[in-house]
Amino acid sequence: MIDYFVCYVFPALSHIFCVAVVLTKVEEVLENWQDKLQHNAASRPSETVGPVCRNVPQQQQCIELEREQTKKAEIKLKDMVSWLTEREAHHKMYLGCLEKENEDLRYTLTDMQRKRDQDELANNIKVSKLQNEIADLRMQVAQLSNEYKQQIISRDQQHKDEISKYKCLLEDETARALQLPQTKHNILGKNKKKTTEKHPALIDEEEVQKTKKFPELEIRKITIKRRKLFQLDNETTIDIN
Figure (cartoon, rainbow, N blue to C red):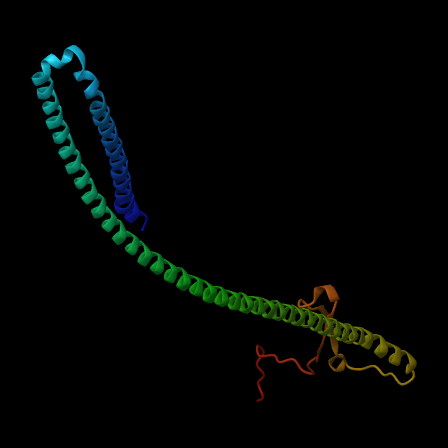
């Protein structure tokens, strides 16, 4: 639209302005010529009085020449005025067409601005809705994150409680296992009268070993081995005969 004004409207307006200036100049020239003619007509009787009256034919010839030149100048000026008037009418008609096109363009521009405002309003409503949805989603994400953190904390606490519980159980079992030989020894000490010497094959061997799974708990593993009553001798041969 700006290019349209620059290419068509502004040149036409400048041309019309130039035509108007030329018309004013022509009108000024015509007025000057009319003033000169009136001045010459007023000065002719005074010039014919006295000694100049002797050259009447020469004066008449000069007057006729001036009249012819004046008529030619008037004809030229009239032609110029008519041409300028035609150009002015043409440019006025062209300017009217341009004004009509300008009015149509203004109407189109107003309609486009109205549609743009409607689209901008609709887009603003959509953007506000999306922003509200994003805010809700952020709140939900924050809430879920807090819940997840609380679950992790509760699970960690539960695992710690279970570990401490099983640790206590293991310590109790270890203490019981360590106290078992001492209780046996005490029972044997109290019942010295009933004790009898047993065959080495009937005595149990106890082996206390440290477990490798929980070395920091100092849990010992107690294994009981039974002695064999008889030992097999596969090397010696016996002749029954």
